[in-house]
Image 1 (cartoon, rainbow, N blue to C red):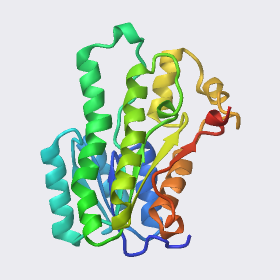
Image 2: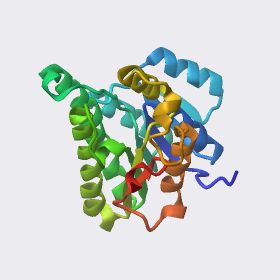
Image 3: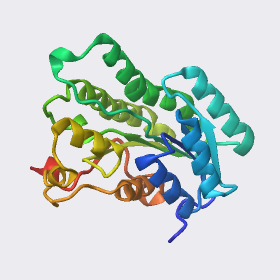
Image 4: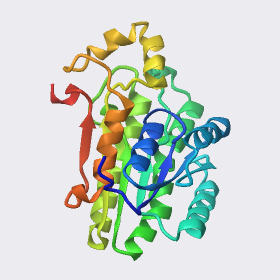
Amino acid sequence: MTERLDGKIALVTGGAAGIGLATVKRFLAEGATVVFTDINVKAGEKVEADLDSPKAIFMPQDVSQEADWETVVKATLDKFGTIDILFNNAGIFRLINLPDITEKQWDQLMNINVKGVFFGMKHVIPIMAAKKSGSVINTSSIAGLAGSPQATLYGASKGAVRLMTKDAAIEYAPAQVRVNSVHPGLIETEMADYASDIYEAPKTDLGKMHPLGRLGKATEVAATVAFLASDDASFITGVEIPVDGGVTAQ
């Protein structure tokens, strides 16, 4: 594999499982040094041990807490001196009928999915802007592009990520910082297991909602993220890229 990210320092949130883990592995394969974080400390430490690479460093983090962002960013700068790539990936998935959404559920999901992305951009983009270089990729969802049942809460969070991405991209384009979002369809992760339980349908049936006829793979999203992180995407900013097997083309 071409090492497009050779010498780059990447920060990946939600990196202990699913799309985050697949992206950590892809970044490493493409030559990057990766600091990855997760609220699940046990899982993160196991991933770090399994990867067994001096270029893969785990740090515990609750992305909804600004103090955690300050700690992670400072530790990364102290060790590596800069951050070239930020993958704001950590998030939670909830499908709830609109009248049943509680204020507690609203606040929890928004704090992680929206505030977490905001804090990441707030604390990392200025580092990139100071050196006139950097790429930020935010994980949104097809729920941030189109409506679906039981997704009022989740869709609101992912729609916010989409627009925050565009706003930051325009604000920091003069500083040569690129900010883009990826919008996965239903991917073969724990989220697909959750959706299967909610809809009481086999995952193979859920996969048929995609015109390509199957669930997506975390590695397929990771490949898109790696492209956006690389200089191959040097003239791309402020866009949303669906990785959805054709769902949003319908």
